[in-house]
Amino acid sequence: MIEPLPAPVSSPRSGRFLVLAVVFVCAACGLVYELELVALASYLIGDSVTQASVVLSVMVFAMGVGSLLAKRLRCRAAVGFGLIEATLALVGGCSAIALYATFAWFGGSRYALVAFSLAIGILIGAEIPLLMTLIQRVSRRAAGDAIGTVADLFAADYVGALVGGLAFPFLLLPQLGQLTAALLTGAVNAVAGGSLVLLLFGRDLSPRARWVLIGANAVVLAVLALTTAMVGDFEQAARRAVYGGQVRVAVQTRVQEVVLTGRGGAPLDLFLDGRLRIDGRDESRYRAALVAPALDAGPHGRVLILGGGDGLAAREVLARPGVRSVTLVELDPELVQLAREDPQLAALNAHAYRDPRLRTVIADSFGWLRGDGYDTGTYDVIVSDLPDPGITASTKLYSQEFYGLASRLLVPGGRLVVHAGPVAGRSHTFWTVAATVRAAGLATVEYRATGSGAGYTAGPDRASDSARSPRDWGFVLATRPAPHPFTTGAAGPRAGLRLPLGSEPLSPPRDAVPPSTLVHPRYAG
Image 1: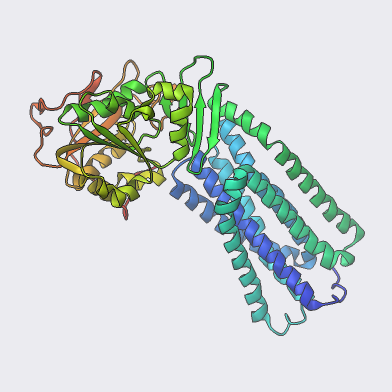
Image 2 (image 1 turned 180 degrees about the vertical axis):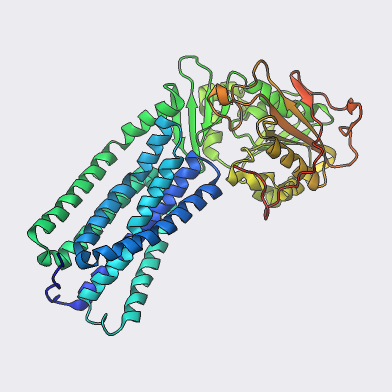
C-alpha cells in the first residue's frame, strides 16, 4: 500500500524546520549510541583502539546496508521511519545494559558488541533516505532545489552529531552514567521520531498504521522507563555477578570504576575498571619484588612513585631505612582518598598517607614528568607502578619518550624499576618493555617473581579467576649510566642485584625486539 501525499501543510517552512530538527536530534542520538558502545566495550573488553575500530567499521558497513534496505520503504516512508526510530530507540537505549549483562553473567561481550553495532548501524543507515523522502513531501522548495535540500539535511545531521558527541563525555556520562545515559537517549529518540510522523503525517496514515505507531512508541517508552527505574538494582546484581558478594565500595570516579571487596574479615580485593589490581592474599610479595631490588641497589633517600595511588608501593618504600622523602604521582584523586580513608585499604597500606615524608601529586604521570616534574629536583629511585602496558590508554606510559623523561630525573647511578607483565603469559609485551627502556638510554636487567606454588592469585591487571592467573610477574630494573652494576655476563647478574626470595634474573631473547614509541605503539591489548 502506498501512502497518499500529505495534505498541504499550513506552513511548508514549519514542516521543513520540524524535519530538520528531527534530523538533528536523531543524529545526536545515533552518535551517543556509537560512543556508548565504544566506551563500554573499552571498559569491559579493553584495548580501546581495537574496540573503537570494530564498532566504527561494523556500524559504517551496516549503515550502507540500512540505506539500501530503506529503498523498500520509500512508498511508506512516514510509518516506516516512525517504526525504525522506535526500534532504534529500543535497541540503542538498551544496548549498554545488554552488553553489561552479557559481560557479568556470560563472561564476555564481544559477540553482543558486534550484534548491537550491526543492528544500530542498519537502523541509522535507513534514517537519511527516509528523511529525504519526508522532507521532499513537506517542502515546496525540494522539487526545484534538490542540492539545497540535501545540503540542509546533511548540515542538520552533522551538527546533531557534533552536539551528541560533545554531550556524551561532558554531560551524559558524568551525570547519568553509561546505562541511564543510553536509556534516556533512547527515550528522546523515540519521542522525536514518533512526534515527526504523527504531527506532519498523522492525518494521512490509515487508522491501523496510526495506532500501530502510537502503540509501538508507547511500548518502547514504557520499557525504557521501567528499565531506567531498575538500573540501580541491575547494577548491584551485575556487580555481585562480576565481583562476588563481598563488594564493600563501588565508586565511578572521573578516571575509572573503583571497587573494593572483602567483607567480614575476608582479604581485600581492589578492582580498577574491572581489572583486579590488589589481592590481599599475595600483594605483599608482588610489591616487594617491585620495590626491594631498586632500593637495595644503592642510595634511596629520594624516591618517586608513578601511579600506585593505592599506597602499597609507598608502604614498601617508606618501610626502608634511609628514605627521606617520597613523591607519589597519581591521576585519580578519589583512589587516593579511598586509600587514605577506607579502613581496610588504609590498614593494608600501613597508613602510608599519614607519613609526613610522603608528598602526593594529582596529575597524569606523563604530563607531570614533562612539566612540573623538572621543578622537583632529581631522585635516587623511580618506581613505575602503572596500569598494564596492554591497556591502550597506558601505552604512552610504556613508551620510549616516557622513559626518556623519567631518566632525566634520575641522579647518576639512580634506578628506575618498571612492572612489565607476566613473562610466561605475555613474553612479547615483557621484552618490548625492556627494549623500550633500553632505547631511552638506560641499561637494564630483567627479572621475574614466580610467587609460590602455581604462581600469583592476583596482582596488577590480572583476572580474578585463579585458573587464568599468571605463573610469574616480570620487572625491568634500569639505571642511567652504562655499563652499570646490574649488567649481565656469562656468570649471570653481578652481586649488585639482590632479588627477593622467589625471584630470578632473566636472559634477553636472541631476536631483537623493537621498542614502543608514541607514534608506533607495539603493545597488544
